[in-house]
Image (cartoon, rainbow, N blue to C red; front, side):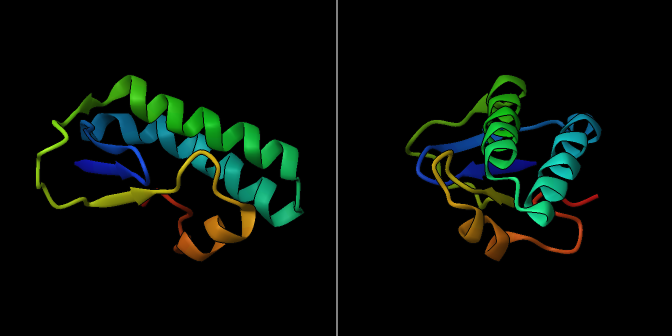
Length: 92
């Protein structure tokens, strides 16, 4: 799957990594629902760090369609709320 981190670029992630990423996504969703700004910020950074670690960066000139778009590391809680679907940021 091709994943875009807003403001950074794209990475290719194997589907087998999404179980691990969904745990962080679930934690992020709980923190957002409780209004835990500090926890939200920490978990958002952890989620994006894992995507970067597990993914293979695509070249900057690559024009692959992104199947998943994640917020930038400095996105606000309100901005991330607008990006959510019923599963959180990551489907599944």
